[in-house]
Image (cartoon, rainbow, N blue to C red):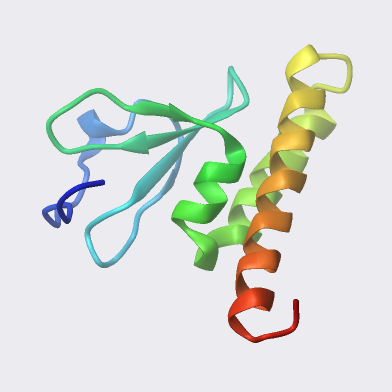
Length: 109
C-alpha cells in the first residue's frame, strides 16, 4: 500500500457478512464470508477485497486467533467442500509466515 489508510469505522452497510474483525485503530478491517469460506478486506470507499487467508493473518497478526477460529469452524462445518482444503492450506501458510517473520526479527532463524 503506497499511503496510509485513513481511519474509519465500518457501519452495517459496509459489512455484508455476520463476522467482522474491526480494528480499533480504524484501519485494516476484515470480514469473513461464511458462504464462501473467505476473508475480505474492508475499505471505506470501495468494494470488499477477497483475501488469501495468509494475507488476512499478515494484515492482522494480532487477530490470528480469531482468524484461525473462524477458519476451523468453517472447515468443520463444510468437511467435503473443496474450499475446506484450500482454506486449511491458506491458514497454515499464513501462520507459518507470521511465525517466521517474528522468529527472524528475534534472530531465531
